[in-house]
Length: 637
Image (cartoon, rainbow, N blue to C red; front, side):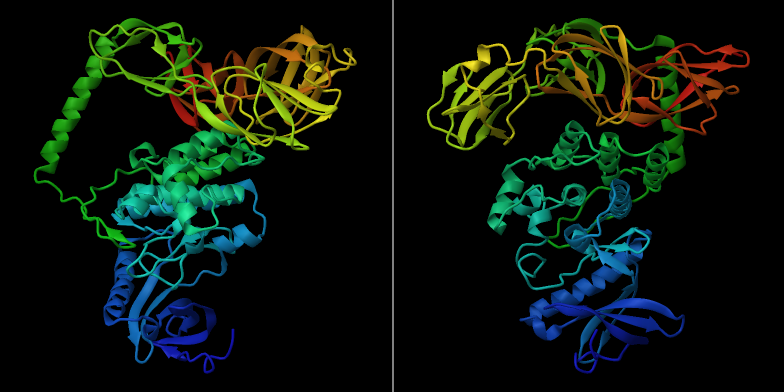
């Protein structure tokens, strides 16, 4: 820690007794001190006025010290470092006395450990999401969300710091007169325009969580210019291998949204983002998931006040809404209108025009108001203003809003086209793509239409490799290892040992019982491998808990392994009135009563829910389970 005299630091700051030095940078120091009145340890931040070049900059830094203290007065959250006092020390400049958090900075944990479990990482993300949402509801925008501004206490809980202070004079941190924020965590609009709102913090938080969960930056680069270009123009990198315990498709979906280039395309709140991420996690137990979701309910998703300030500063203040006069009259009118609308819906029921929804090519999943209703071609009632989203693997999503009088034709879907690098080991192989030899040798860049099937063959002397790709599948930067006897000619020949078994690898969040061609093979947990004979097989997959049933056809090739991936999971809570009863899902007794006390693990998808009460059984309730949800059911009187 060093001797305070040698470090030219005061022994007393205000009423606080300085104990030791915690850290020092170009713009100031942080010391550990004690408040003698209440024997409380505090961290005190001191600014070095002699390190600031101009009088104008000195004035700005002093104003930021004062502003951070003022901002802290508006915030009261267990995941935000509290500021207790602000003042000035003669000969040393202004100071801030703040909550002392014994622990480690998050950036140090990410780089140097200790290694955290998935639950520990998510607990940090949940705490920070709550803190940021709390600040946003209070009209405060942090503007420099990053791991370096987060302390993780000895109990594993995070603390968000630094609302408004530029600390060190280097390229990675905020400085007066130049780029505000940290390049690696800045949002596209922050880089291009310098104006931000709460959605910029949400983007920065998404970068932080990406790095926390994977250990990688979504926009890496060896220079600031490279990083800024990628943030503004490129999607986040693909994490290879995928993050353990998180479905790759869910990872891409969640981070493509929170790191969207346009602010309006991102999650509405940090809590909404973390809740979406939890839906993609498959290795959490029921109690762990309930605990994390319970923490997310601390502040909810309150609407954000209108942003009226775009001051180019690290922390932005947002004016709170002014209450209107006659609030009770306005509220009573609103309740009357809502009640009338609810009565109309009850009497009239939803109406819509039945329409044929079709796509070219067919088989696209149809979403109405973000709820999956089937695959094309299909008939679907649509009301004016209903929004459709059509998704097919390998193709760009198609968005459509129904207008009165329209009769839509089949929607033509545009394939995704990407630039893919083909690598082989050893390099220098010739490549045949879809029976056409390409110019050059590996490594080789090609244009890849993800909407089509592709066949790929590498050859080099006596070595070779062949592989088929289904729509939506891409090489993804894989290095294909060339082996003997796998040449372009051998591709059309029978395998060397046609009786050699193939394999089926089970992946997902739960175990399944597998029947192959009517024969029960037993139950297999995630990570298990089944040895199967070569050929086409019909698989029946079941799981009594969490209530799953599916049928699939697979083709097993000699010596090759195929993947069997089951869907994600969610938690369903059921309540009934009057009284309670036994909850049945898809005809199976869950052993749980409908008293809203226990969440039931279920597979994401469509289920039929029934409750058997003392006076009878409820009507079958079809439910499309996408994420954790609650259901209220009426029992017979």
